[in-house]
Length: 212
Length: 198
Image 1 (cartoon, rainbow over the protein chains, first blue to last red):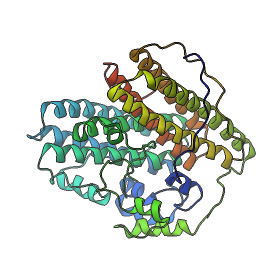
Image 2: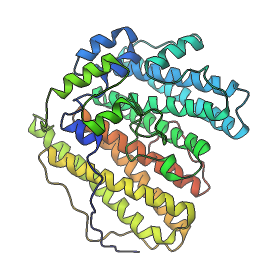
Image 3: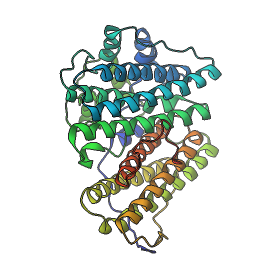
């Protein structure tokens, strides 16, 4: 296997990225979503803006990570979570907390205020509802719980998808991309618990852009 | 708001409509619809070429560098798949399809920045893997190289959608690595920050 002739084949059809680039879906995708994370009351104003600021992007990342930590803490406390899922959730909670710490360090450098965690389930649900994610209370089985966590992970991915376009600080960009990649890995592992090891289901898209 | 990634369709809504219809035909967020509608009236078919020619040249060089690594990965998958079995083979087929998508996307971005996309090399030095384990190790090494490359590229790209797209590719390579690590009996997701050096 030392040498191999390789010719390109046709790529997939017109993608969302191609639509984005040609302007059909807009220069900056889903500004309202990131604005809602940064400050739900400012979504309307931000919708009129072309691009979130770096501060807004960082605040949105902090907020979605707080939501993720909260969701994992709730999941681990869920009595119907089996041992395998619980072990995964516990490991991922630690990684989400590490994300928060890394972003908090960047926020301190940038002079961006920290985001408090949701005070309770209704508060978290309110934010999740804004982002079209099911309620933390609407969980009746392990499968429900895992699907909710997948949705939260995809929400994290989508937040970084938008945020990276707005960030200018190189260190913040790199940290955010490293976190984004980890969230995508979480989503893959969680999907494998729900859908089995079929790679078409665990890694369904070549572009891990999540919900945005 | 919807996901391209969830295997079922329960979350597909406005974004899916955007992709299939090209316009925001429906959705639950009036604000989001306003944004999409207004942007749909905006830079239709406008090339996203940086106004700064120096930045354009930088983007072209960076994206072509990433494209070279994608071509290498594709070559490794094509060469390695015959040595894989079962789930590993299925995963590799899925991943090479996705890497083809990355290459196509990067090529398009290079052209949109005003450059010429690199073609694949006639051949690649991939070593002499002779077993399934050898191939998995090779693929993991190349996927990790891709991650490290994209992390180098990202901060130097022009702000905007190019960065988002490259980030989405990087995150997908991280998914590949996690599956390959698991296939090799390694911890699938060893670190909270994915650097390509895990």
